[in-house]
Amino acid sequence: MQTRPPFMVSYSITKKCNLKCKHCYSDSVDQAAPDELSTEEAFRLMDDLSTWGIGLLVIDGGEPLCREDLLEVVKYASSKGLRTTIGSNGTLITKAMAKDMLDAGVRAVAISVDGADAQTHDSFRGLNGAFKQALEGAEACKRADLPFQFNMVIRKDTLHQLDDMLRLAIDNGANAAEFFDLVAIQRGRHECKEQVLSPDERKQAMEWLAQTQENCPFVIRVPACPMYPLLLKEKRIQPRHFPAEMLQRIPYYSRGCAAAMPMGYVMVQSNGEVNPCMLLQVKMGNVREQSIVSIWENSPAVAELRNRELLKGQCGDCSHKFTCSGCRGRAYEETGDMLAADPGCWLTPEEATTDREKDTEYGKTG
Image (cartoon, rainbow, N blue to C red; front, side, top):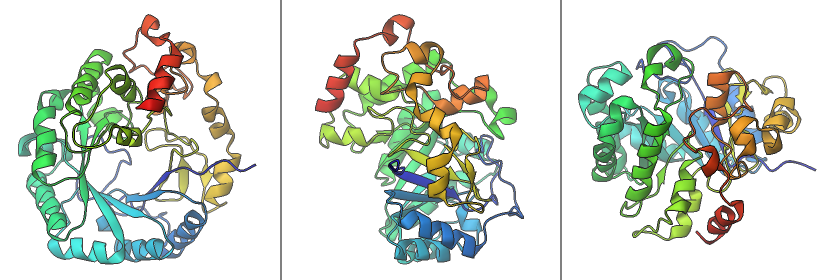
């Protein structure tokens, strides 16, 4: 019996990038890697994805707009029926590029904005003027009627800017905001590990986001923090601008960490290597050697990851292990064991043994 496919697949089409972000999950540089999938290999990947039944393809990098055949790949993916989006730093999105992306079949763009002002953003992304260019990219998308969202990293230096960052997304016309809980992998291990939130800081940030969701005009998503939906349920958050059921679109809502999970998430590196998540870069296989569907079905590492009964420590004992399960990427990065307890969780042992039936029931009624 086949395992249900992931809802979302991200394909890091290139390692080339025009910025030098301190937290870069792909450790991108200013030149394309010599082993990146060719256009034809990318097409074959699109063929496999199109018959698999996934819900969303995200093409990112590096900076995907640095790859010359990007629009060619997008056009092919769209012709195969794949709902295709782009993850970009926004600096290369001109009015003409926004129109070209829309014409090629791009359905939406995620633009990275990592601070409420130029100093905060530019210092983190390694280029003076990047903030201004990112906002100009958002404006170009807006003028082209290309939907976009802001992706924003939460770290110690931006904790006091969360309100202004969210306001920036709203004022610039974004239709969603994703606040990424910083996990220091790849370049981040060396350049911004000290920026990772403590469990108490994480809890405070997530409580603020949960409460703010009530009056926010769009859904706030929080990748890398499966504990966040628990707060939405605990506080019985009722959004005023859209049906409460839409909160169930938030990653991890009643499903836990999405890494390599059915209806969850998987990523493909620029060289074809498949990982459970951009934050959990454990090799599952390579699409140059076998289809992504075969990798998904047969990876021994993934079989372990999907069995929540194998979780260890507090995550294994927690009543929320099926609806939260902690961030497997953070557990792996900080302990070397992807099944270990999430070191970033703020729940005490007493809180972790809350009645699971109440949690599940609220998950059903929203």
